[in-house]
Length: 280
DNA sequence: ATAAACGCCTGACGGC
DNA sequence: TGCCGTCAGGCGTTTA
Image (tube, rainbow, N blue to C red; front, side):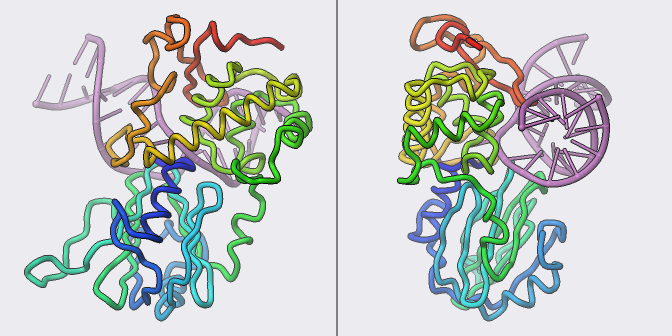
């Protein structure tokens, strides 16, 4: 499901309340259960549950596509990978019975006031970590796309340090944190760059254009609460603003040429072959 | 250094 | 209807 805008939407809901339920800030964890043990990357699932009980949620944040939940004595992290979702709901239904779990619910944290945080994950790719400091898990990530220290000259220097195709490089979380398949395709279209262009071939204006395009698509995505595409994530509206993603065979909004699908870095990739010419 | 191939998983969809 | 291949918002490991 999630790239940066979808994760940001979930984080805001966990922090302030929203479409994924009421906020969890300040709530105290009274129980933890794991229904698919491999969801817990670290520590071992039983220890994970034992150590969570009694903890209080102090803050909720995001680093790249990771959700950071800062507890009193530890940091809890979730990565939703392809199909994960977090929701907050009442533990009880209207009759006062414990509400049943949904298919693919993998981890549940119960709170003292009758609410629970549920991690649903059909494809079982998602992971949770409980560590002393979140940096152990997210320390290797590249800069945030909206970081103030990331400007066009620095971005050009980053691109020139590598000799790689633009799309896989942008999706490498150690290079830049938060971009996924959709937003990378959309950003490259806006910047009029072919996904196979080599990163060291960009000039200053192209690098500047690319950074601006990345920020524009991410901003629009966040404003739309993310994109709803398949059966997993719902609520966002950014899918209505796609220029190329999943528009294979449809007309380019700029020039009318048919959008093409190709494979770059083992990922389905969508381009306008006229607007995004490959010049190496 | 770069990139391909594959593994991890379930579910939706189109073709026959 | 059922079976099959293909595809899917991610990422780590192995291989070339």
